[in-house]
Length: 145
Image (cartoon, rainbow, N blue to C red; front, side, top):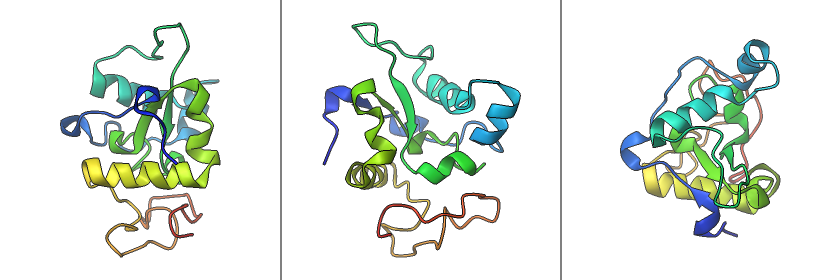
């Protein structure tokens, strides 16, 4: 299942990179009470030149979502814009609750940016998270799990 193009936005390939190394959702929650996705939103804003949070044409607040749920715990992926999408609120819940949507997003990130932190598309699947020793995820990702 895919999210219709008018309800999702990716960064341009030349802006797909790690913007704030060392941050995680937990470190953001501690520093910015009530704003646990702060650095991910800031990374999206820097990559696109948009002020965050982004408001749609009808005033709805779009959400910056991680396409790998475990990336929120990994300082090498939390603010990597190849692993982030801007999603209309009607579809935001599907990015981490629907395995088919998550797998589609992960495939799209690979096709657009060659972003494959788990090795799923290159045949070198990590046992948990991205396989990086700094990654605190410790849980398998959706694809192939």
